[in-house]
Amino acid sequence: MSRRLSWRVSCVAVFVCGLLRVAHAEGPSPYQLKLVVDLPVLALGTALWAGTSAIGGSAAPPHCGTSTTEPCNVGQVNPFDRLSIGLVDPSMRLGANIVGALPFAFVIVDFVDAGARNWRSWLTDFVVFAEALAWDGAIQDIVRRASRRPRPFLYTDGAYAGERDSAEATYSFYSGHTAFAFTAATFLAYTFHLRHPTSRWRYVVWPVLLSLAAVEPVLRVLAGDHFPTDVLIGAVAGSAIGILVPALHRRAPTLSVTPTVTAERVTVAVGMRF
Image (cartoon, rainbow, N blue to C red; front, side, top):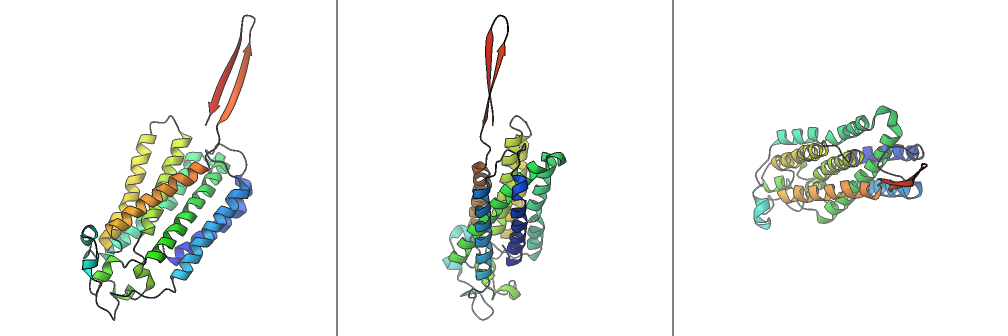
């Protein structure tokens, strides 16, 4: 993820923190917030993401493939990832950037699904979503700064000449954009699944959202920004966070006991709502 995007998310997180008290009200959201836990968790994830992004911008340039060095050695790349070397298409990057905006559209979809009258429910969902994105960004930024894998275009002479000397050119593993897309897609699909546990649309929502998210990694590989393993790991990591974070916020089941007394019998109905 770029530093500009991480700071935008940081600003959103600060705004969300101010609304946490309102979102804590009861509502039909499948999730439940605990202020003493969610506030520091969101703040910590945001701080880690913003901090690693800021530090990464001042890192050293690539050791190969720069404007003053030879292209990186193809022989050091595994056979599977080597298939993507030479794929450099700027138009694919433009398309990936456009597709990368879809997660923000997912937030609107969740609002429509919850209903305008249930804005507290949507706000609760949004806080959980913000936590997922913050930790997704923090984890992938830490991994990318630690691994510093050269991007595929550094193996092709002259590709993206204006970017070859930047530290960002060494943050190939793993794909942050892919992780971001899959975090958003799985979060929305999981939320829909919980909110509509008997709906047949669940079996449509999951494949559709995951298919939309899968467009991002394909375009990133074709653009020369990532290797196949970069986007595969990004998809797995993003999906895991997109399910784990909301699962940890899932509202506890409510047990109801309804006695019925008649002249002939006494019955007790026990129900549980998840």
